[in-house]
Length: 154
Length: 92
Picture 1 (tube, chains in turn orange, brown):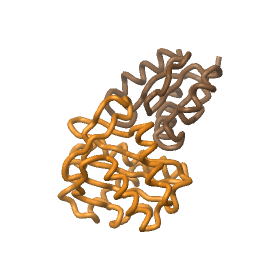
Picture 2 (cartoon, chains in turn cyan, green):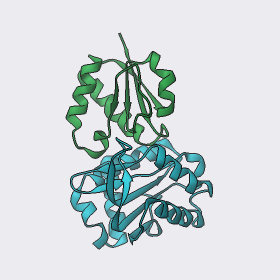
Picture 3 (tube, chains in turn green, brown):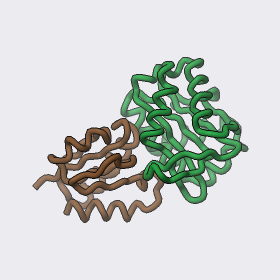
Picture 4 (cartoon, chains in turn cyan, purple):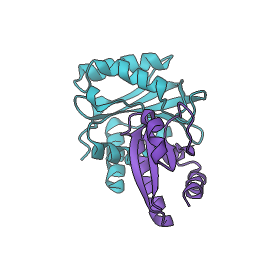
């Protein structure tokens, strides 16, 4: 059972002009819901600046921003889909821009949870159909899909 | 001689974990004996003297004396074989 994913952690069709707005808004939301400490917003922005997480796949872009466990209160996976893509930098190359439409914010404290979730995400982000259809799927369907994938990679 | 592999990401806990897993299986398959060490990329500079290769999922903030590979392919699934081969070439 995927206890760190719930409907309140799936934010669909969000609109942001720049990455900073996304981090501030999502960070505030996660803080309000008790998932992260106030320090999280600054830390995740700083981390993304130094170690960007934009991933360019086959015709689409996914980012997996995250930061150190000490800024996390309760473990979570937060999925944000964007109405219009925003620019992130590439995980492999700071000077390369990647247009991102799907963001998975990771908030983990325990290494084994993190590993399982990352394995799950690796499968999911490489599945073009899954990523491209996120916006039209119901939240409970998305959760089900992620849970099923997690069961498969276990 | 047993090789020493540094596996790095920004925090030393997230993407490096997935790559650790992947490299462990790759080296086992290739019969390469190695110690893997999961680190934060900022630690790489001081640890490189004891290692044969640095494999990072994140950008390399500086240059190193040992071969350094950015292995985001393991996360995107694009170009995996190429990275596998580069790593094997260096460690064999």
